[in-house]
Amino acid sequence: MKALVAEITAEVPSDDVTLISNIKTAYEAAYKKVVRSRILDQGLRPDGRSLDEVRDIWCMVGVSPRAHGSGLFTRGETQVLTLATVGTPRDAQSLDNLTPEEEKRYIHHYNFPPFSTGETRFLRGASRREIGHGALAERALRNVIPSEVDFPYTLRLVSEVLSSNGSSSMASVCGSTLALMDTGVPIQDPVAGVAMGLIKEEDRYAILTDILGLEDHLGDMDFKVAGTDKGITALQMDIKITGIPSEIMTEALQKAKIARKYIMGKILEVISGPRPELKPHVPRITTVQIPVDKIGAVIGPGGKVIRSIQEETGATIDIGEDGIVFIATVDGESARIARMRIEMLTETPEVGRIYTGKVVGMKNFGVFVELMPGTDGMVHISQLDTSRVNQVEDVVNMGDEITVMVTEIDSNGKIRLSRRAVLEGWSAEEAVRQDKSSQNKRRRTGSYNRNRRDSRHRSDR
Image (cartoon, rainbow, N blue to C red):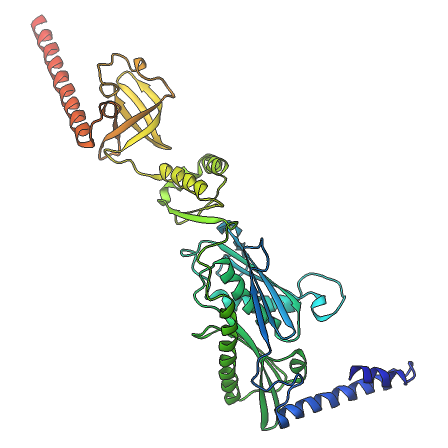
């Protein structure tokens, strides 16, 4: 038909712009009338489908060997490739606007390059249409994304429209479901979407399922519906008429539900649910809950402690204000070491537990040992060795690492330690008993010596 119009206008003088414009306008009006009349009178659509028929669908997952997840969704001449990337909590998008939401951990980008419609125009920044379609696809899936507690990752999906002839935004929703399940994201339910159309002339109307670009252009409604088997997750509607009766809307929603169920079946034929595990090159995130008052100990002065753990293990570590620590690594051993280091920094000493610490203070009555950053305990000189010790320097020096057992934590939080208990192989109960016996003996000896000194002073007088 376009070739016919071009042939007719070629016979018109090129300087007669008005006539050429009128010919094109008349053609558009006649073409629109014929297409709409065939749909209303005969139930025939431009591509020969019935009113409720969905175009042919085929899907693929794992299209990209390196992406964390990928899904290719094709419906008729519309094809969308969605790529999923998994990141750590620090990769979340920070929002600086008037909404109460401060961060987004699920981000969806939609790209509509000119080649998808056979055009050669320049690639520029995202258009309003691309931003809007991306927001629609994002909302369609947002409520099935697992919570941060269940899945502590940031997700970024990019939908690339490779070919477009109607409802690329809903194809992006379907491609995103494929990509998320291919990644191994435990989404609550798969989501599918379809675009419904309407041809209405006075009291006559026809609702179209899975509209083409032409039907969108010549029709009266573009009604996008996305959802799961349980309900609708997103709606968006454009209309070119004054209004639509509620009865028509109800019917459109019912037909959209049938179409979504059919599309969902096609998706589940390819991948029945989220993969049980993330792919090997996806960072693994381990969470550790620490007391809020211990956050400073893990970070260290100027971030020194947390940086040293990250450099040693190769892990990426993020700490939330609520004390949840996120450890992201590509292998389990690094995660185990990082977790152990953090737990050592934040654990509370327990009576009977054995620790290895550094000597950080020396007195004539004993030494002070750092069990963990910010937590010291005292080893009395009588508990330094299995035999009598005259001077602490005979056994240890400043900076030495020694292994000790916690024998007492008093009401003020002061910690008593014993190296002798470790050397003797005492149980926790035996170590506590021996330490208390030693304390009582020192008290009695001290009292006896004081009494002797007092009696000598009295006799001297």
